[in-house]
Amino acid sequence: MGSGRTVAVFGAYGHTGRFVVAELLERGFVPVLSGRDADKLRALAASHDGLDVRPASVDDPAALDRALAGAAAVVNCAGPFAVTGAPVIEAALRAGIPYVDVAAEIEANADTFARFRDRARAAGTVIVPAMAFYGGLGDLLATTAMGDWTTADEVHVAYGLSSWHPTAGTLAAGRVSRERRGGRHVRHTGGRLEYHDDALSVVEWPFPAPLGTRPVIGEFTMADVVTVPSHLAVPEVRTYMAVDAAQDLTAPDPSAPTAVDGRGRSAQTFLVDVVVRSGGAERRAVAAGQDIYAVTAPLAVEALHRILTGRTRTTGVASAGEMFDAPDFLRALSAHLSLDVRH
Ligand SMILES: NC(=O)c1ccc[n+]([C@@H]2O[C@H](COP(=O)([O-])OP(=O)(O)OC[C@H]3O[C@@H](n4cnc5c(N)ncnc54)[C@H](OP(=O)(O)O)[C@@H]3O)[C@@H](O)[C@H]2O)c1
Image 1 (spheres, protein in one colour):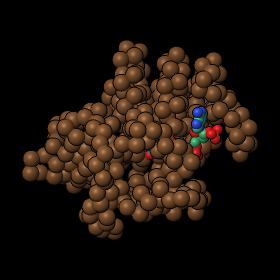
Image 2: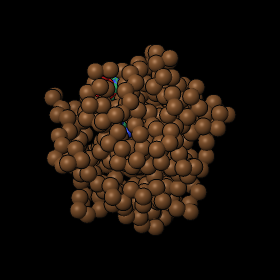
Image 3: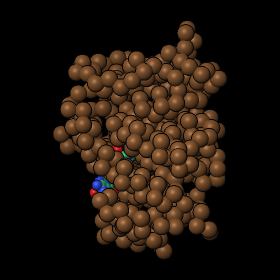
Image 4: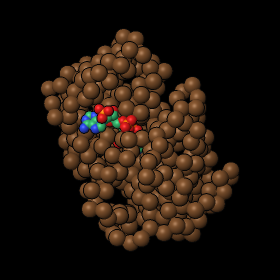
């Protein structure tokens, strides 16, 4: 196994990081376990014989450089990304290696594009933020649904989650994002992010079978409002969340996901329904699967695999839909996602 298969995982012992480490191993990569807590890293390494442990905190550039030394790429699974994103990207740029993260934070993802676009392109390197369930999958589906359309009037991404059971990392990311917004809401309209104080309405969304029509919170804005318009000419991008799942986030004592199968997945199911409209025409791409945290691992690792085998379409900072052949990428995940595309 050459060094071209070595991938540093920052935040390796988090809930999502563990899925990513397992997926890397399953696909023949050699993960280097990194993160801020040496004990938690060693405990994780104990269950994966022979893996390198390299503790690093984001305020220690030399430790980050040691964590990335000899790696072919780095995947950042430690959030809030408002805190971890820029330092790990800086380290990736110093090392001259590609960077992928799983950030679901709208402002942190927008920052990655704004702060690193020029430097990453000048360096000829690849940075893919939000390479995950939120932000990445919706963008791959929207790009697939667009097909040969080069522009559209609207993209709608509806999340039909059976439940959420957020991790501590999700809740922390939500808190940081809310603070950054001063408690305001955000949406993407007229080709830009707009902050507002309007009440969020509940609407009925006609999910395909087996879910059927369900109440969703309209303008429950997710990272797709950064990734989709970063490369598709669409002025209106809206995301919707099943009411039941959204309530899990605000529950007084939210419970984390519990494993129900050998892969560590929870019983949570999801359906992501993406509708693209142009003039009077409509196109749709739908993905279904199990456990939004678990499925983030094959999404991120497929991205790493394509980056390390040269199957990319650009350099610099780009979302999944721009960086990769979106329909081909989704087809490659058929073991994890069922896909239905209607043109
Ligand atoms: N876009 C998506 O669909 C998607 C999917 C999955 C996850 N995520 C995001 O990924 C992040 C992690 O989620 P998770 O489910 O894995 O949560 P988690 O189990 O709570 O893990 C969070 C991880 O981040 C680390 N971390 C937090 N702050 C850090 C800092 N300042 N420096 C270094 N490490 C830090 C934690 O380390 P300690 O234990 O030492 O605090 C832990 O390893 C969250 O931001 C979540 O929103 C996004």
